[in-house]
Amino acid sequence: MSSPTKPEKHITNNDLMRNFIIGFSDGLTVPFALTSGLSSLGSSRLVVLAGLAELFSGAISMGLSSFLAASTDAAQYAVEMAREEKEIVECPAEEEQEIYDIFAEYGVHKEHAVMVVERLKGDPEMWVKFMMDFELKLTKPNRAGAWIEGLVMGLSYLLGGILPMIPYFAFKNTNHALFTSIGITVVILIIFGYSKSAIVGNPKKDSFLSACYTLIVGVTAAGTSYGIVRGLDSANPVRA
Image (cartoon, rainbow, N blue to C red):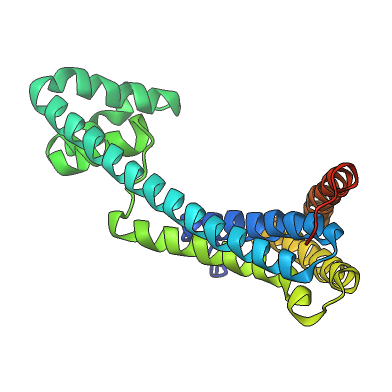
């Protein structure tokens, strides 16, 4: 008696997961780099105001960009689908041959694909869907979900960006706030870098490397920003 097969685990809502990762990663890195750089000027108020300005403008920009990208994908899919619907009516022989060509790419000979082709020809809707999936390799987007993707991107950017700024609300001394922010961000970068790799099923070694890469990127961005602002301020001091 064969043992029951275990259901395969697959990641669903890939677009939302991707948007969250991009938004949180950018939110964690960009505002952190900005506030780290501005902290060299010695004013917590300046850091908070500039950080919040960047945080909200960045979240809005990222959210709108994601929304527009998702809307564009939906529009492109609709155009290509209309073209395929027209082609199976006006040139069915060519479209039929394209099905055989697709099967040939997978090593399926024409004589073995005849029944499938005839079945598809008898159902124009499935025929078009087959061509969209295998010829054009386009996944049908959820037009109604475009605003959700934008919202996820924007909110994840806000979440990632506000965490490194918390110490600047708590400490008036920018050095105390900076080092506390660095400590918080380093921990979050490591956890986030590891988690975003582990959640898709990568082995622990790859997840650990992902954590290291994420940490290096964040620290490099912050250190570079701090050095540039400190250098500019030394050349031409800014009064906060």
